[in-house]
Image (tube, rainbow over all chains, first blue to last red; front, side, top):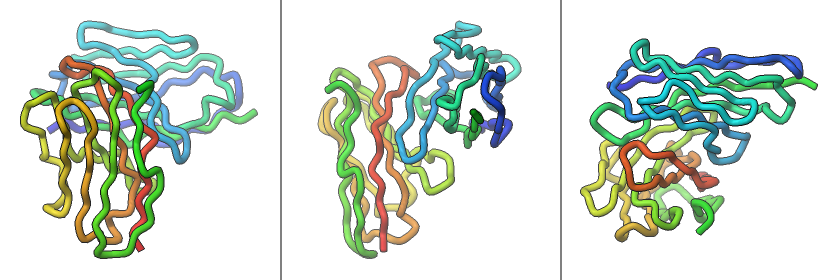
Amino acid sequence: KQEVTQIPAALSVPEGENLVLNCSFTDSAIYNLQWFRQDPGKGLTSLLLIQSSQREQTSGRLNASLDKSSGRSTLYIAASQPGDSATYLCAVPTSGTYKYIFGTGTRLKVLA
Amino acid sequence: GAGVSQSPSNKVTEKGKDVELRCDPISGHTALYWYRQRLGQGLEFLIYFQGNSAPDKSGLPSDRFSAERTGESVSTLTIQRTQQEDSAVYLCASSPDRAGGELFFGEGSRLTVL
């Protein structure tokens, strides 16, 4: 059974800092891993999708890496801004199915 | 459409009533998912549709919950005899036709059961 854990659960930082958010999963036989952000009262916005054959993906100030063998992914946010404040979630499909399992998220607050 | 569309955005109902929530996926997306998110909690998988295959209903919490999808279009999630613990945001996502494709979410339907 796939289990997804995100650390830390919450993070508060001053503007301009570089951040690392962690996601770990128990079943490494995954097709891909996806990172999302969720603003309060809103749906989820896709940030990055890493296929199982890839080691990282980049979009603007965001960089996500994937290490399947160790069951870990890292989301790196460079030069954080107050607009980055949100909850960040990672999701992986359960092995043998297309059922995505979500972590409980990291609640990020970037202070101006 | 341009994105995943869900309706209603908000629904308040009395305990014991039935409710229907609708999801209109991105055109051409064959996979469709329903998730539930209780206040302050993570996302719980409910059901998954892929094309004309039998849906994966393994996440439905009780037989009061059911969902249908016509072909590769609209899906309806029905909750019968609603209970207060059904209060949550119900999120729908769609994905292109490949295993583990990128998920795109709607804004959700917030259900409050009084």
